[in-house]
Length: 324
Ligand code: UT7
Image (tube, rainbow, N blue to C red):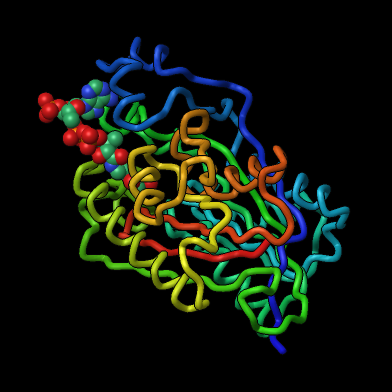
């Protein structure tokens, strides 16, 4: 017998303000056609002045707790994946913990940029498997708009703000691929590629936050290769094949990357949850936002096998298999 982390709730939150490609084309030299053809993005949500990552994360957390009918006082752990914390310290997770009225257990942040949600899921799943936590909230929350150079057309059109969360609960299981819950997580990093995707500032160097810089083509190439490897590893570990996957819930960076991954698995696009068109790339929030979309619109059902994959700055990358 093993302990599995079952997903018993999910939630998401998007800031009210929607910024279209047309609006961006008034600011930088770009156009709707270029953005849609190269990325699939039509619009993104942008947080309001004074609306911080913790506020977005809190709303997603409350929605996840509400969907499970669970109160915060029964949680043992909050792990928040974010690259855009409210402050350098304390962790955004502790802000969320406080606003949830929770004064026990532990809350901390995980930083793996766009792979952050897969990393945070891996951390929480391991706490649950070891019996150190029974219920854990895993949040991905970002105000990525705050670390963009809004005059740089090669990056500012790509990202958006938002938050998503899942609630995990430990449950005994057989250790088989038919179990409900997180079947596996695989996370990787390689600092060699720092310069392809980074922020040119930080508290320990410039005392500023800096802005995002990306060599898009380079990142694209690595994303396809590395995520494919992580997916193969996930399936192999569980003795599963691409044909067993019901839903791919990928990090939402670029529709062309998502399509390439689906094609490689021979998975039709109607088995892929796509939100990049409406949310753009919300970094650590993109997978839980997509997950929640698939759950609330009724596509993802109990017993379905979900394949999550992500890649981001570092480079970091990884995959997870979840039976819903
Ligand atoms: O979430 C973390 C992981 N991130 C990713 O996975 C992102 C991976 N990369 C990508 O998604 C794509 O590489 C981009 C969407 C960033 C760029 O697409 P691309 O097809 O690789 O375009 P490119 O960078 O090769 O640029 C093509 C052209 C360039 O002009 P020249 O040099 O061919 O004259 C760019 O200057 O498009 C130009 N360009 C733009 N034109 C209009 C770049 N950005 C824009 C823009 N509007 N916003």
